[in-house]
Image 1 (cartoon, rainbow, N blue to C red):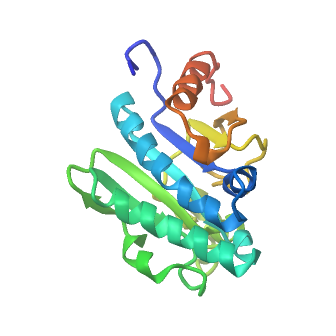
Image 2: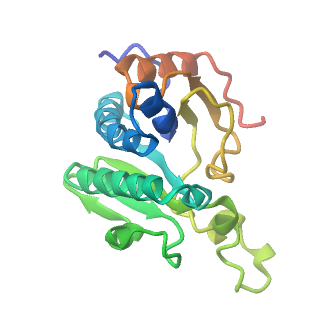
Length: 220
């Protein structure tokens, strides 16, 4: 697919890969089985972003709120996140996991990725939100006194994640679901009605086409 026609490529894209459970039901499967089918689309999207020249990509893995779901579903989305991260570690990427590691819900297999690591040529930064919660993120630096003297972006847990230009959400829902509230303050938001496991190249291409028409002023 030719991305040269686009005059503007977002530097940082946020991905909300929603609809795995609904996809499973629609395909006659139990809800927890849908997460397995959500791993491969992430690798396809990685390749597309490399080809398009995207510099940074953030995936919404799972939230602390998600861990209230039945145990079968919890284990399934944890496993999917582990497989996705380990798979991306075989590619050219700078990987970072952002999430509450003090909770037992955080996959121990991913602890080593909570400090950014470079794999291969490190062509693109990839952030994965795992056991993440917006309140945990914003409350990360509570112990520092007189924090008003420091920029809030330096105090949050996700301080190594840059401002997001474009958010793409699959599954038709029109909400952020607590996705990086600081970095998304001026993000454009593109909704895809198809479920994440039904990912198509056209989804990404259409999102970039739509982005060309947006008036990016950053409040100016």
